[in-house]
Length: 143
Image 1 (cartoon, rainbow, N blue to C red):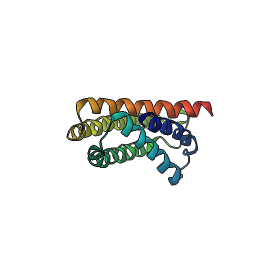
Image 2 (image 1 turned 180 degrees about the vertical axis):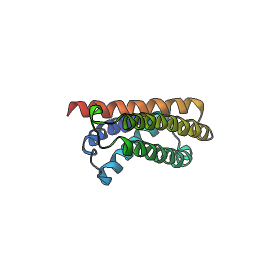
Image 3 (image 1 turned 135 degrees about the horizontal axis):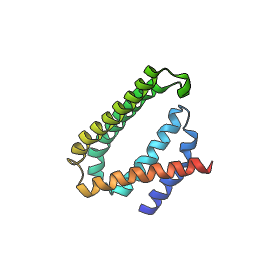
Image 4 (image 1 turned 90 degrees about the horizontal axis):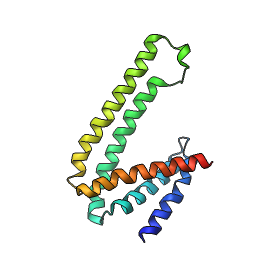
């Protein structure tokens, strides 16, 4: 059963290619695949899932908002030679702030996850997230 869930999740990575637009249905499908993948890899029980997913989704929302704030500063992508020194500095500062905020968010949620998961499960979560991203990137490169 576990292998089946992982296989389904990996197949779902193909859908990421089509999610590059802002299609909410495709995004929901990808998130469902991510959830199945993480649930399987971390080995979440039904009780753990009920406690874990609301916290995880809240963290993802905060990280997405953080990334969107950064993208507002660097969009539209203007070549460096066309930017003023002040604009370049602003973009660099925004990048550092985004990374600092991302780390702060992740550190805060690590403590929340440890209320629900064992340290081993938390390690598996981080590993599963990286594996899922790699599969998505691998699928994007194939297309």
